Length: 219
Image 1 (cartoon, rainbow, N blue to C red):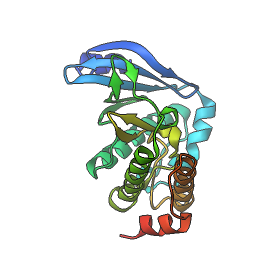
Image 2: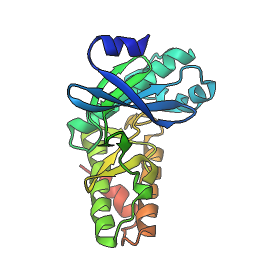
Image 3: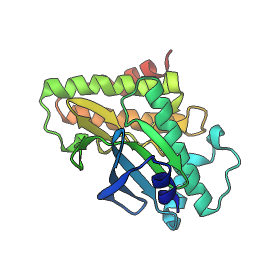
Image 4: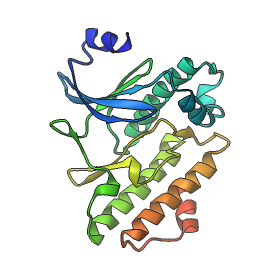
């Protein structure tokens, strides 16, 4: 069993409660000698999940030749999220620190306290000054991902950002693709539009989509 492998290797010391559960995965709070962990277990029996992830794997040159069998694709998805987090972390984007990917399991830093996860951005009550500061951080993260890590998040919105100790973290990197993916520019445009929409609705004075897009893709 994949989970027992991680326990036996000492990567995880203790599994605690479920943080979140969905059709595609479950996330658990866990403990290790290094601190609290989030353990994301992808459900390998989900055919719908396989269909939904296909477009993000096929076309990404980092994962050429992936077998289309469901279990193998989901193992690849867990590894893909790990590698994307690793690249984001390396270039200075604030993300949960990735620790290990093993089969259908991703182990990473837990953001929160005593098993209660940090709130999603969508659930935070921010004044305009706070929202403006976080908006500028997020734009910088998008640019770092594109120009330094050479990836696009591809599902960025207020649902995939957490705020912890006053700082914004990007999460859920499974769908992130190489900038060489044939749909990378479409995904980037969608990410930028989502961010502009949310922060505009939060009272932030935002620039135009064209201005932001040009700034992001320029070195």
